[in-house]
Length: 201
Length: 408
Image 1 (cartoon, each protein chain N blue to C red):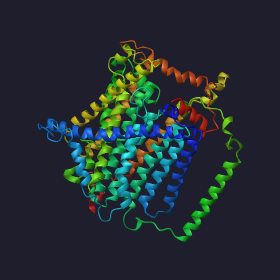
Image 2: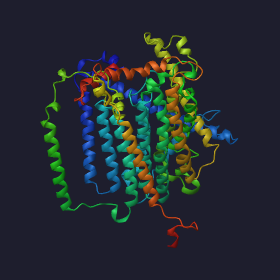
Image 3: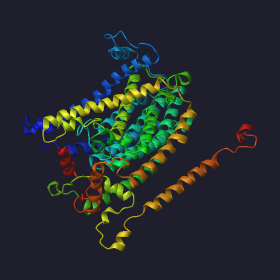
Image 4: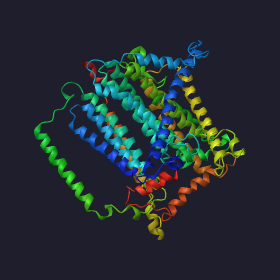
């Protein structure tokens, strides 16, 4: 422990993995391989979250990005990965445009990351040790309870510190209805005889 | 263990202790998956043989054909490693490993006994569900990279099936989490200590029903019969692994048996008390007392055997189902998921919620305050945030991580 800082070691390992595979996503021309590299890059990012003690965010990253989105992406790829779309050649103009956009984003991110005082590196001895990191407060926060404001003594103000749950649920049910409705509208219409419109072709 | 090894090494080589400890743990887990696969393949042959009124393997390695899988493995190693023309070589080679890694990663969070766990995550349930869902990625890659229409069909079917079955599976998993008030698998098991009536499957009628829904969905999500449409040999040859041969093919099988064991382990912990036996024998013998290390170790060992027995029972149950029920059609698979499993799971979820709200003490037998006392924990913590306030603006805190790691 004294000779090797394992935290830095694994941080560098995961970070470099994420960067290398992110570069590979950009530089590959095959669509499915891009998706594969993207999975590896996102997986390395979730490794970074686990390393930082944010287990919940790490598992979330695995579940949503690596699991859900990538399966969806693969499905999209499957439908297009035939013929002319199988390999995508990038023209010089696209390279230049991409480099400008990506480079300026990187500049903004780096400058903002170094300009915030609270994010500056603190000498290790000065840092307070967290007692135990749990996801409970995060979960309560997702349910609408303002765990950071629970010491609110004023009763009228404390009442407003929770209660995003109902609006949140209403919005999600609304979204579900919209999804089902659009799926219904997109279906092929049945005629009285039970034959679909497509049968004429 | 790392602390123990450190005593033997000079300061500049102490990092070796951590490496050795990590390697031993990884070695144990990997061999559990690989050795488990060997044993389960043999068991599957025996079980299927007996169900179909045959003997199964009888010759290799004595009376019961113990070494049959080893002989199979040798045969697989000597087979030619074929790759179809037009296949995407790198993806074709990577796909089995992606599947295996995903199935193996689930074991990191699976506790085998009190404190015997690769990494104690406080979102272990969520982590396992997330990681086991990634296994399908290897399948899709295999199906695509094989450059064969059978493989592609199989992979598409399997992806559709696994992705849809994750919905009811997630709903089933939520119910024990809701009763326990935590996603930490270790804490969930600890709550079910004592008599078997403390197991969550007997907590209320809803959890009893939801266990069966969970098991159905778990069987489907690991692609076992009757849900093995992706490998339906009568119509799709062998599905996504049609073009695989030899050792690469067997890695897919290792992944499959690994996931079977993992979902059975999850079922054992969520519904059947984890490492706690039906009768609190270890408690009576004083083996759960953490102040006596040797007795505690022995108690943990018994607990591990208990847990392994439950997992093996779950896997055997899956085999029994496989060789008894006929295969479902793809539309029947989807109907089972969307029209039966999901609504049942949703209703049971609401039922279990209402039950814990209105009858927190149980119907007939007044429960011990065991659930209550642990569940109060988060409540108190939420009301006194100043006591456990973590440094909010410092997510990358190596000191905190180190203290956590050393306290394990």
